[in-house]
Image 1 (spheres, one colour):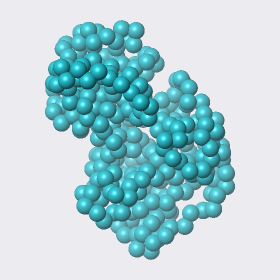
Image 2 (tube, rainbow, N blue to C red):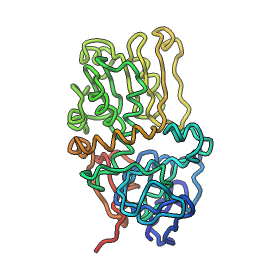
Image 3 (cartoon, rainbow, N blue to C red):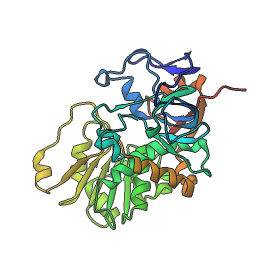
Image 4 (cartoon, one colour):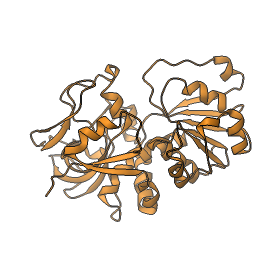
Length: 337
């Protein structure tokens, strides 16, 4: 099979021919149909903190069809259309049985979506509704990240919401905040490039970054934000979120920042702010997102700004390290006819 392979930090991925994977006991082979390029993959290939070994095939936002079933792999069959939950786990512990593989003691994030085929366990495979195109199934994973974060706010119905960041995760947070009952939703980002997308996903107002002071946010929302979703993941965003959130409000941290960051605890304590991190998702999040594609695919598909073949993927991957007009880019790893 062909795959885009990571070999060294800060070096481009290379498209190579690798042996076709064979399923071991309790495993299945997935023929990958689409895989999204995620910002976290960019981080993984830049920062040694993640410890990604050379020779790894990344790509965790993917969907495809089951091509082969190994001995003892139950509950799935060849031809099933699935979104793959890329959390490797034992499938047997209390966390796994509760549908929360992120908290399994052997959990790791599995890639493989940047290749024509990948290996997974049956409990990682979430069926796609028959009316959902495989091409859209790669949206399940990033949408599930947003859903999980939005659910972390607990008391969302009617709340005034600020989403900081308008990348795919910020847009997913807007989408789910709207559908889970938020009141007025404001979004802001480093530029206005995705203002239209933010409105499409459910934001009431997009705040110009040239005037995104707490006062401007409060005017736009009609009061202090009761929930702030931090979806950028760079130093300074925690302090900014604390500054913007209202008294006794909640900050949900969805941004993936691997650098040291600081904030003034007094600013947080003085308002009795609750700060909650959000990592990954559970199986129910995946199932809800797969079902949402069945009902509202056009809105979610608006995030997709390009689809590239595997041969062009490394070049596109490198271009996404810099400011770009792209939002969600999908890779089609299937051979060209």
